Length: 254
Image 1 (tube, rainbow, N blue to C red):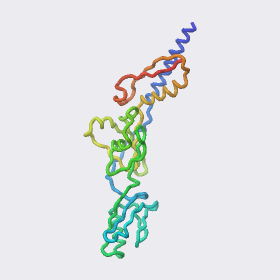
Image 2 (cartoon, rainbow, N blue to C red; image 1 turned 90 degrees about the horizontal axis):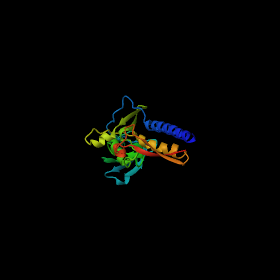
Image 3 (cartoon, rainbow, N blue to C red; image 1 turned 180 degrees about the vertical axis):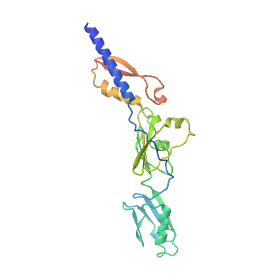
Image 4 (tube, rainbow, N blue to C red; image 1 turned 135 degrees about the horizontal axis):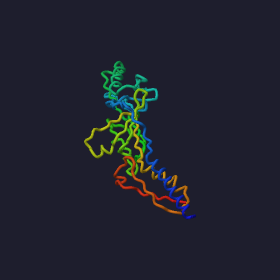
């Protein structure tokens, strides 16, 4: 009778664990997609605080300077003093300098060279090798930004639900992308980013179930009796990671 009771308790425990693991596998942490996602605008270089630039004078090299735009948006130049550079394109700044130096130099010839752009960047996080900032050099796609972050973590990245978050006019928009399809079809339409976009690569449900079992099952159950429990894919997981097979999970039973 005692052995029967122990057998019943173990079967009940296995059923409870199965429900818990399946529930964890079905969970999702990606934000809902917004109805109207604004398209990326054409890249236009607008100088901002923190940008580094060179101002060169063709016939007066002693006036050449290299500066970073201050937090107030200004730079300081010889003969004319402080000039507002923030909020202008390099061409607009050049025209402003030509105007200000017109009565200081004879036929001034000035060139504005942008060294680096502090504001032309996006943020990449989640299941990539090197999460963080990615500097934009011209137009940049989601896939290119992820590759510059070291690429996907192949064991855990969910390629079918990559999220892009974009702010426009004090509103935040979210868009979900299936990059698995883009990798299979290189000729597919690219998705372009704009400055300050956030790219997030979520984890696969398989990865979350593994973490759940290790944290909440194996670490808290006495290691006295061993059994094998299997779970199968319930959501869209990269077939390269699972091969379409069930994955065994070792559980420790009391």
